[in-house]
Amino acid sequence: MTMTTTSMVELRAVRKSFGSVEVLKGVDLTVAAGEVVCLIGASGSGKTTLLRCINHLESVSSGRIVVDGTLMGYAETSKHLVELSAKRIAGQRSNIGMVFQRFNLFPHMTALENVRMAPMRVRGLSKAEGTARACELLERVGLSDRQDAYPAQLSGGQQQRVAIARALAMHPRLMLFDEPTSALDPELVGEVLAVMKKLADDGMTMVVVTHEMGFAREVADRVIFMDGGVILEQGSPADVLGNPREQRTRDFLARVG
Amino acid sequence: MTSDPTIGEAPVQQASRVDEPTLTVRRSRAKTVRLVLGLVIIALLAVLAVRLVMNSKLNFAVIRQYMFNPSILAGVRRTIVLTVLAMAIGSLLGLLIALARTSSSVALRSVAFFYAWMFRGTPVLVQLIIWFNLALVIPRIGISIPGTSIDWSASTNVLITPFVAALLGLALNEAAYLSEIIRAGIISVDRGQSEAAAALGLRTRGIMYRVVMPQAMRAIIPPAGNELITCLKTTSLVSIISYSELLGTAQGIYSVNYDTLELLVVASIWYLVCTTLFSIGQYFVERHFGRGFALDRGARSVGIMSLFNPRRRVTS
Image (cartoon, rainbow over all chains, first blue to last red):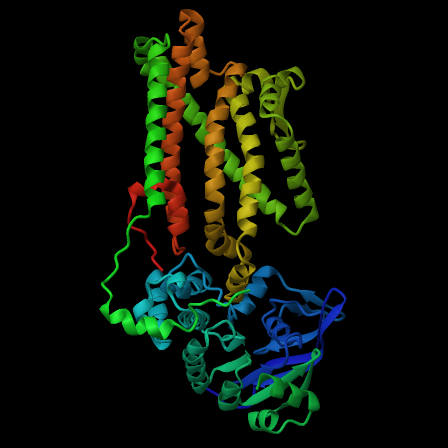
């Protein structure tokens, strides 16, 4: 395994409009393999849209997104970018894990079934292999005793940990987190952040949209402050959170306390 | 506004609670009155029903005699076969139309919309008569592909038997209604579900069949069950295009022996038996697709059906 500075994610001049509203106004970003990047910023700053563009849940209006050496969502011709077939896009997405604010667990499946479904359907694992992988991952997030529970029977924190296990079951090279603790009761935030910290310590490349400044300070290699669809400031957590250069960053940090 | 005198007195009450006896909950008087009233109404209705039946000139011997008459039983069988086939074809076609309605292709969406508009907008009785009389305008039906040896046709009168006309009329009509029910089910599933499945690398079909449809079924089954029972009863219309299902058979018998009401009672009892059996089936299907969801609300609305399974699968 090479732990060099190969980049896992590269965004070049990424723009995204919803109708006449431009949400991303030219974003350049490089995330190295093994790096943990936290995206912070006010709501409407474009951070969630940026995250969703990385795995092509939103298609970009212009610009390029390369993940692990693969241009996401498009084939490049001499003049244009042409959107790939649904099948190819699905294949690209299967290598990127995503964790949602609202968990989005499949309510009609148990925790175990949630985790093993995609490896079985997409990777063609047998039921036994899928179950083994799911059990291992549920143990890793501390939920081996709840594998037969349905999402409705789990607390928010437990659901989000199952969702992390479900994403990890595809053995992704990159994990995207979209405000993973924003829908949780305050006392449940810690258990989810602990799982994410462990994941970061294991060397996973992570892009995390978050309002948890404590987590960003402790775990992130780099903090990026977004404002009005552009990256306004980035650097080490100590710099951006402790000694921000921009007035808008200072205002934002003062508001979130 | 006057200030509430009890505010600020809590500590005093707490201090005296040591001496208070344990209180038990007693049924309120209003509830008892309601129960007694309910029982009285049921008793009165029962007396009324018994007197109505006893004083009528209904010949119960005839009802008993025809209840299991072979022709009547054959009629029941034809009614059930027609219902099941019409619903099966209707569901399949309805699913395709619903998917077309939700697709991104304008052409598919228009065709699906036109279909539902046409078949929901005209009476099923008229559609049945049209199918039955199709030979008047299209005497022969066939397939021929130029340049191949495929060239086949047959007389419409031979192809469209009363049974085929009945099945076409009912199935195509059901498809229009079921497509809307299925579409409503599909759009009732949260968008985050298909996004989560897409993020895992599932393709459109996998997302639909593994994630969206199983959840949509929860919203689809109750109105589809309704549709099944409606379809069963609608089969009685088919008697006018000379297909001898249950009602047609009963009519055939009473046109000879003039025991009109008795045979209609026989038919009604069989319709009730069938709808009851279908409803029981619906309960089990609903329970299957209720997996993982708190069943309390749904189970209560099924009322007597919860007798089949007092234990709930999910208690959260």
